[in-house]
Image (tube, rainbow, N blue to C red):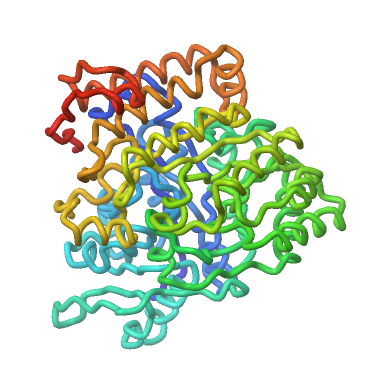
Length: 526
């Protein structure tokens, strides 16, 4: 069989789970989309190679997504079905293996070839193939490797083993697994062609927005994510980017290529852009060059860096230049209020002093400020946790603070350290809880309860103590005050779901200074 037609399937960003309290009440937690950059880039490469390829996003369905997929399979009749999810979404489908998707494809088209890419294929190489979920899997960056695989299948099946990152079963029923990762030179990536997304689904990206999330497009629902680079120059202890990218170095697209992609988006009616990068810029000079390129082409539009702006690269001059091109929100990965944690535990380049300057500059420029903090890191003390809280609380110029509990993800320095030191023994639980709302690590310095009190009650008190702060938050994330009240209630219900017997102070600061014993029982995380 010669492969001619390829269906690139995107799994839902979130999936309804009856065990999750939030999904019982909060509709916006269940239905939301982000731009399928990886899938569209892959399909664009396939079209350039002469194949017929389209992207089908299961996340655009409120219900019966598999039924919709069945209809598409019968109508399009692909020879080849590949699952592609963004490796940076950290959603509930973060480790999806595609079992239901591939089984549906095989039921409709028994001879179609199935391929898994993304986080599961990278974190657990060969597992889905060995379990006969799919025919092939590719770890690492798959956008170009999928095309290479198809060309090998069409020309010389024996050459498949030369593809980096590939896993498959050979004629002897043996699992063949590449020791390397699939890699790309960023200049080889095609410009994403969003007309390859199933026509009936395109408008859904303007409807299923990330309500209640810090990436919500405040100025217009007609937004698009654009990726300008790959990789990062640092290796934060809790971050899996280096692992998922196969250890590749930081790579940036040529600015002319980025500007062309921006111009295409604006011409197609896009009104707001989010830059969805591992690392947007590595120094202030690159930030200034980016702003200069926009000004030169007379491009101005609302935008922000969705994954967090690298703070060490920010100066007043750089922030001012970016603001003048339309940047309106600074998502700031402060991570901690302790220099020791930033340097020795996380591995950041910025300091607390510099971060305080960034807050001052951003407020002078009237930029929205969203602060990102990570709590519960191996090596962190309860005093460090208190210092981080005081940093967030004392800086009232921060419009909203996110307290994410450090979650052990496959391949991170933090996870390796935790397992080595016996802080986290059950490897089977890795990535079962991705939303970073439940503590999975317990050390001699802090407990899951400490982290739960911060994540629930200090988060609530610091962010929502006044009506003006609640109103500002709702404006930024597209919620009503009623939605926010329900979200806050749900957060507290979740706390008591995990800690049903807790009767102590509803403040980590009070708990910190109390003599009350820490609960010894870990929460039921699954």
